[in-house]
Structures are given as structure tokens and as C-alpha cells.
Image (cartoon, rainbow, N blue to C red; front, top):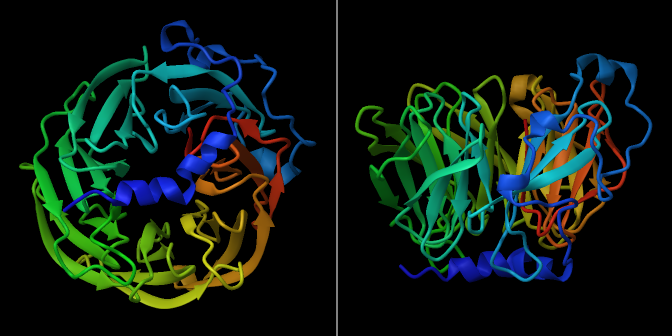
Length: 406
């Protein structure tokens, strides 16, 4: 099919981000940038100004010293970035400091890390889609491989570390690439296009938006916004091939975009972009079947707020949803061992169009990549009630569409 979905994705936030025209503070070419581990104590004019330190419970869980933060952007739009942004963050204060850029990667709009922490992967969200591997020790680009489709917008690494999974939004397909011992990518071993069911209301074809592995590792799941379906596959870990085992249908016109599992592994939460809802899903590890539950409010009132991504705290007690049109983060209490979400409130994101959100590994900080304002907002996460507190002024990052804190 054609890849008209690429233009739609960029209409929903991307081109608007060019107005920000911001640049990464102290940006340097990759060859000149110090490694994140070498930037302890450094500052830059554009670094976020932090508020007072978090409460004692939060501080006791947070490690000390700067931690790496990788930033995704679009390089082919006005005001966009020049590659993968490099930064560090203080896990206690949330302060972000820019340290440079890894150039030579086109439109790296989504990023993922290998389980061994040595290799970073990026989509090249272009008409002729690709995925790129970067060795973090020296920031060398290990090469790119075609995804076999248009506008790849998501990728993840299988827990075994041997396979890279990617989703082509424009052509509605999912791809598998082998990963060798060095972290480099081999030739694609699988490409599956979602040819059924028919596109949902308002969609002209399939639009694969996410491709992830279930917590038990037994299945890989693809979320398709265009067909209102979540597909479950078995991945042959010797051949890298996919076998479909189940389909879960969302409400017609829901536009499912992003699925996040509860740490318990039996429930997941689905963000629906088109009809402004979230849903709790039950997952059966034995069969790979996902059962999508009743749709729930995003806390943004009537109209479409383009829900983007939902994350769950490591302890499984709270969940947060990015509402792009509403410029807010919805906070949910997770109840009944993951089987229920209860909306608590919404918090202003301090930016425009939060495209993606991520938690620090300890769950003490939340990062929001704000596409249209070209900023990354950082929030302290209260360990007792899940409350969010802004950690100072947002960090300037051109057309920020992904933040990956390590």
C-alpha cells in the first residue's frame, strides 16, 4: 500500500514543531563530544534549572552522579535536530545537561537500548525506512538496515538481545532483524504486513505503531492504529520468523497507538489515539491472547487529545498517560494487581504536544518529550502517592519526540 500515513504523522505534531527553532545547548559533533560518563559536574547555558531537592523518600531510592539521556528528533524538518541528542541528568534533582549529538542518523524519532547497555538503536523514520545501530562506547555507527517499509516509528530489542523488532507506520508492517555479538544488525529475517482486518473508520490502511515483547518473553505484540488491532506473534528465535497466534480488536475507530505491560505481566494498558481513551487489557502468557477491556477516560474532556504513550512505575502502583492535544499527563492509580486503572488527575506537562514519556530506571523521575515546543520536561515522582512535581525549567531540545533516560 502507499505510505500516506507518513504525512499524517508529521501533520499531527511534527511540522508544527519546526516553529520552536531551538537547538541543543552546547551541541557538538559526535567526534568532539565527551562521553556522558565524563561530564560529571558540567553545566551549559540551556540546562534545566532545578527546584528544591525531592523529599527524603525519593532521595533514598535515587542514585547519585550524572546518568545518560538520549534524545530522538526529526532531522528533515525545519528547526529539527541534526542527529541523536546526547545529555546527562542528575537523578536527584532532575537537572538535564546537553553534551552533544551523534550525527549521521536521519530522523531518529524513536530509540531503544540493547539489554547489555552497549548498543543504541534508532529508527530512521523516512519514506525508505531503516533502523540504525550505534555502539555507545565510542559512538560509532555500526550500520543501518532497511525495514522494508515506510516511516518506521517504533523499535524494541527482544529480551534475548538477539533480535530487533520494528514497526513501519506508513506501510503497516512489522520487521525483524538479527543482532550479532557486536550489536550490529544483520539482514532482515521477517516482514509481515497487516492485510486484515480492513482499516478502521477514518483510516486508509494499516499503520503499525509499536512492536514489543511480552514480559514472559513468549510472544511479540504489534499495535496497529489503522486496523484497530493488536496482533500477537510467536517469534522463532532461531530463524527470526513470525507466526501469528491471536488478534485483539479495539473499538472501531479507537486508533490503538501504544501498549504497556504491568510489571506483573498479566495485564497491559492500551492508549487509543483516535478516540481519546485508554483500556485495561488481560494477557494470557500461554496463548498470547490479549483481551481489550472497556474504554476509559484520559481526563481531558471532550474532543481528541491524541493520547500518545502510557508508562507504569516499576512498583506497579501508578500509571501516566501523555495527552498531546491537552498538553497534560494523566495520573492513574493501578489497582487489583494491575486489573484496574483509576483516574486521579491530570498535570500540565509544561510543554507543547508531549509525544513520548519515559521513567528513569528507578521510577523516581518522569521525562516528557514535547514535540512542538522543542523541550523535555522532567518531573519528580512521589513514591508514596505517585504525584508529579516539575523539576525546574524544561530542557531545550529541537523537535523533541523521544527521551531515553538510563
